[in-house]
Image 1 (cartoon, rainbow, N blue to C red):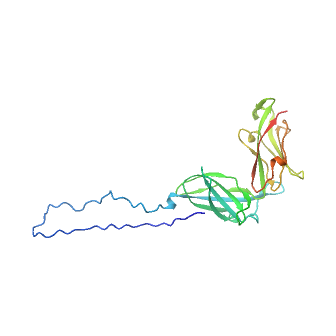
Image 2 (cartoon, helix red, strand yellow):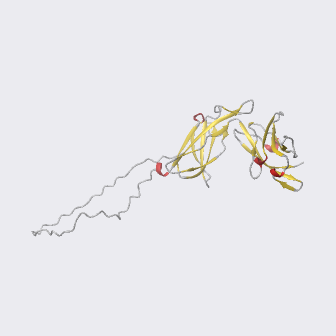
Image 3 (cartoon, rainbow, N blue to C red):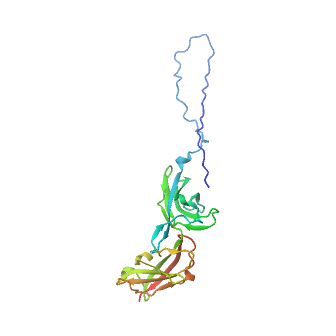
Length: 273
């Protein structure tokens, strides 16, 4: 929740006291100094006047697209789910554990978080029920910088409301030696094959480097509510396997529980044949 400070200006009136000299019966001294003296600049400022929060803080503008997939497993727009009429926007300051929050309707497709102090933040959204207890879908996160008096606009989030993903990384080895993608003669991409309990195959082919050196590759969008078996293998230029397949069972992979989840499967070793 956010507290919006009201703005006000305190006007302080300075009253100058004038003293009148007693009459002495003598002619006035015409050599009196100039009484038009400058004001005393050492008067302390009134420190009780609050800062204008519009000037010292900024705001964060967020938008999102709700997606599903068609029969070709291509991303297509879809309305917000019936069970997720609300969208919570989270803005987490670097080094903190408690984010700023704002609530809006999922169908609005956008929202604003006001009175955000300058600094670096991680931003994400969650689509949820009216009780805010069910995570129906959640975006990935993005980082932004907030500047005083300005609006930080976050690039639109793509949120799959009923699809999710596994992510996986790999290393290559030949015998006792590790290898890099460019060292493997004839190496092409890597196949990530995902199979559900009924035998339906969801396949993706990605570049060898996508899962190396601290990176992680992502599967195609998968229907939520299921656990899948995942198989990874290095291919040659003819898309034939040139490594042993690394297989992660459905029990190890775990169930994809909510929309747009990215479940990390860790790192597997691809042993060259």
